[in-house]
Image (cartoon, rainbow over all chains, first blue to last red; front, side, top):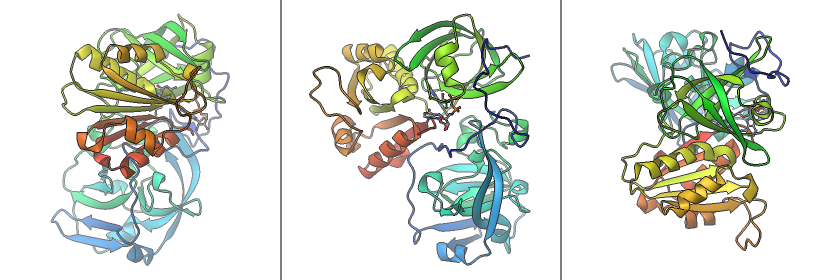
Length: 197
Length: 241
Ligand SMILES: Cc1cc2nc3c(=O)[nH]c(=O)nc-3n(C[C@H](O)[C@H](O)[C@H](O)COP(=O)(O)OP(=O)(O)OC[C@H]3O[C@@H](n4cnc5c(N)ncnc54)[C@H](O)[C@@H]3O)c2cc1C
C-alpha cells in the first residue's frame, strides 16, 4: 500500500487507457542518451545484419530507400515515464530486411553509431513489430532523436529503439546491451513495468 | 546498482536555496546507500490514489538513512512545484533506487575529471565533488557551472567551500547577469569558455555533463567539435528545454 503525500494531486495530468502503468503523457519529445549526439553522413551510413554464423548483409542509404517503405502510427513509452501517443514515422520493416537472412537465433543485439547497444529478442523484432525509421512527423529524423535512422520497437520501452542504428548482430543466447548492463531490464515491457533489474 | 521496491520515506528538512529551488532532506529507513551520480524515482500518491513518478538525482551519496534531493521548479510542471512549494517536514513520499550505474564517478581513476553543469544539473555532480573531497584522492577535479545569475545557483556555498579547500577548480558561467562588480563575460557556454575552463584533450579527462536537454546537447556537441573523444563524455539529460 502506497503512502499518501499530503496535498499532492492538484496539478495532475490527464490519464488515458493507452498509457501503461506509471507513465504520463507528454507533448514534447524529450531526449535521453548516454553521450554526445553522433552525426552520421548519409553517404557513409550503412546498416548491416550479421547472423550467428557471421554471414553479413549490408545496405547503403540508397539501397535502404529502394526498399518498400511503410508508414507507422504508434504510441511510444520511455522508461523515464513519458509516453507519446499516436506518433508518425516512416521506415522499412525489419521483416523486409530479414528476407533471405538465414537464422535460428533467438536474440539480436542492436548496434549504433556512437557505440550504443541494446538487446532485443527476435520475437519482439519480427512480424510487423519493428522498423528502421528515418522520418518523424513528416520530417527527416533529427540527429538528437537518432537520425539519420533509428530502430523503433514501439511495444517495448524506448531504450530498445536504438538511435543512430547501424546494424543487428544475431545471437543464440541473450546478452545485455548498454543500459541492460547499467541496471535496466533485459526485456523492457512497459505494460508489466519491466524497468530495472 | 541497487533498485529494490518502493520505500516509504519522510521529508525531514526543507531548505529554500534559490528563488525557484529547494533542497529536500529525506529519511529512508533501510536505505541501501548510493554511489555519487545516481538518482532515485520519487512517487507521489494523492488521497484518492492518483500517482505520479519523476526521477531526481541524489545530491548525497554513501550509506545512512538520509538522502538529499534538490529540485528546481519547472513552471507549469506537475510534480516539481509540489516538491518546491508545498511539501513540508513530516510529509511522506516513496522512493525507488538508487538507480543508474553509468553516470557515476567512483574514486580510484587516475584521469582528471571535468564536471559541467547547467542549472539543476549540478545535483549529481555536486555529489561527485563531495565524494572526491571525502575520499581525499588527489584526482584533479574541475567544475564548470552555468547559471542564469549567482542567486540561481544550487549548492553555491558548498561548492565555494569545496573550491576554497583547494580541491575543486570552479568556474562560473553567468548567462543573464554576474554578481555585483562582475567584470567577466555574461553569456552561454561557448568554445572559448570550454577551451579555457575545461581540461585540455591531451589530459584525457573523464567528462560528466548534466542539465536540461538543450544545454547538454549544446555542450556535448561543442566538446566533440573541440576534439574530446565521444567515449569520454557521459551525459545526463533532465528533459525539458
Ligand atoms: C535521471 C534524471 C535526474 C533528474 N534529476 C533532477 C534533479 O536533481 N533536480 C531537478 O529539479 N530535476 C531533475 N530531473 C527532472 C525531473 O525528473 C522532472 O522532469 C522535473 O522536475 C519536471 O517535472 P514536473 O512534473 O514538474 O514537470 P512535467 O509536468 O513533467 O512537465 C511540464 C513541462 O515541462 C517540461 N519539462 C520537464 N522537465 C523539465 C526540466 N527539467 N526543465 C525544463 N522543462 C522541463 C516538460 O517537457 C513539460 O512540457 C531529473 C530527470 C532525470 C531523467
